[in-house]
Image (tube, rainbow, N blue to C red; front, side, top):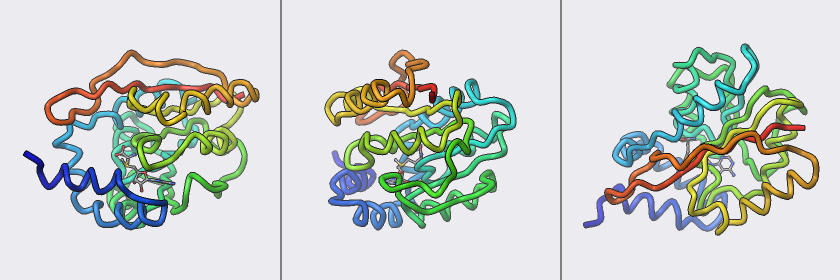
Length: 209
Ligand SMILES: C[S@@+](CC[C@H](N)C(=O)[O-])C[C@H]1O[C@@H](n2cnc3c(N)ncnc32)[C@H](O)[C@@H]1O
């Protein structure tokens, strides 16, 4: 039986363009945390843990597509405090602001040039952003640009979208262009549960060159 949460998820995935997606997230912001709780969403914690592992102590971190701030909370629990959040949706950013863990929050699109200097961040982390109807692999270059040389980009992907949505090809293009090299890919992890089934996800980490 389809729940209200399932309906909201379908509605998000069916968005037509970034403006439409932004408006839908503005509405979903009120129910996002409880809906994701019901889906046993633990990708924020898993990605934050890899980000903390790779990032030099005290370095600035970018939470790209921060949403309601679940990654920021996980990073703060690991003792990280210089966290910048970036998101398309003002409604989601308002929720992030309420967490009190971000040093700075910024509204914009990952599909455009980011409002950050080259090499500003020691690590960029993105969770739930590179997925159906959201952000395609053309955004990887900007994530690498704002990461310091030798720093890392950490992204959680569902296994079932890596090839289907062209992310693997875009990742490889970044390697071929000398922008980053693969640092680590985790084993498949149970970070999301839909309809009682675990959805395999992995956390990928690239080292920026
Ligand atoms: C599934 S939520 C993930 C939020 C958070 N990272 C988490 O793990 O709970 C996806 C987020 O990506 C944001 N988003 C979607 N497209 C975006 C874009 N083009 N630029 C920036 N943020 C975007 C949405 O507004 C939303 O907050």
